[in-house]
Length: 568
Image (cartoon, rainbow, N blue to C red; front, top):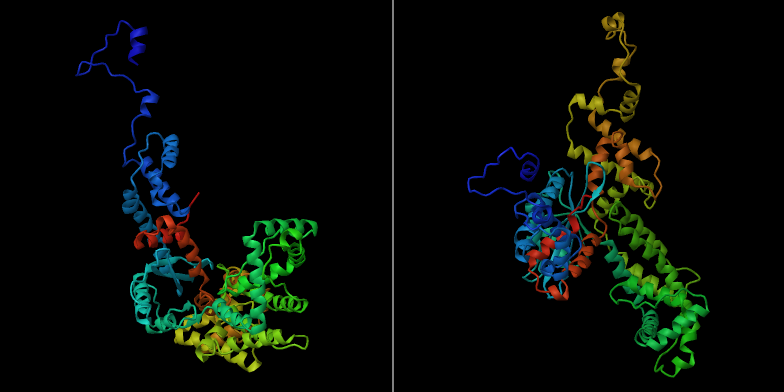
């Protein structure tokens, strides 16, 4: 402005400021040389974004000290001054943790019932941790599974110590609900099972995937299968350690037009990895045989025993038997659809599938018998069976309860009726009238507002109602509940691929009391997979370079990784 006046309006005399210096306008380049104030909104946004990057992408806390990352930020925003690692650890990430915890606590406070899954793991620094994950169905009938905490265990893994951790979590997160105990899904270890009982939590659901793993391991451990698995492992290990053999195998795969897949080595403690090893070997058996008989490989083969035709036939039969069990494990790993309702139907299906067949070889019959013998005694507690059958009845995919006889089915639905009456022992007469018939509610809602009454109807309607007053009399509360349960039982089942929670969302007004019960029971998990998934996340956080990470920061980083939602 001053330059303009001096050039075009010389008659105007400019006055100097108090210091005697003429003010000058700040240029754009010079403005970028001034650092952002740490308390400014822009600086706060960038700092929080860096915190999100660390939490969501599993970046080390030391990333703020890395030259490449600092250069990237300086190019994007030259005025921003990078905070130190301590500031991120002490201020930024704890602030994000508190915000997410408040959001999760708000969601938990509206849940009808909260179920838990829990499991333990050991870090690279040989520190023991226990992870607790919660599960509930929100008001939109969607499954929510926030991770609550990952805490170190410094004492012995006794049921008493584990019970204290569970109790503390229930109090801290306000998980308890009137008329309900907290269901917990765990592995089959006796200490954690006893810990749930000591904490007053029930029922304790044994992880079905873990149960299936134990039973199948028994089957794969029979003598002949043990020998077959040992031979396959030696062959796979040979191709894994010999670069020459691996190259020849790759060539043979191309010549035989087989998929270019590497052989799989199993993990002895996980049956599904043994299944995948056998399945891959069968797929590549022609290429494997061709590679082993190749002159360039044969001279290096020592003490490598190939499989006989009879052993290959046995392998193929075993893979055929185990394939459905692998699909069951995959289906139970779903995080969005209810799984607890699948336990009893799948349990019965597996037992039927393990019955001997005329075409079975002696080895296959022995394998089936071992699996059946290990699985049959499990889930035998009557109260647990009743709970699992009730959850199955509340799932519109399986409510036909086809694995039970007619009398037991009726008893299960009678139990659901009794449970509703126990939770709601008395209803006001007005409520009874309103809820006496779900069909009446739907019909009246569709009909719109009532027609205007004539003068005669208003005067004598109560006296000359043609029996309408009698028909509309409030029904006894037990009858209302029984009719609701009966109507639900007669409704058609839905397709297995459909989402039962979506069905309940659309039909909750038709079966209001059953819907409330379903929202509580169907949140329970059939497996502890949700907590086990934390192990892989923890492995990415507690790496070899960060094996000394403070347990408090381990908990915070896992919590943010699993629960923080980036809003674009």
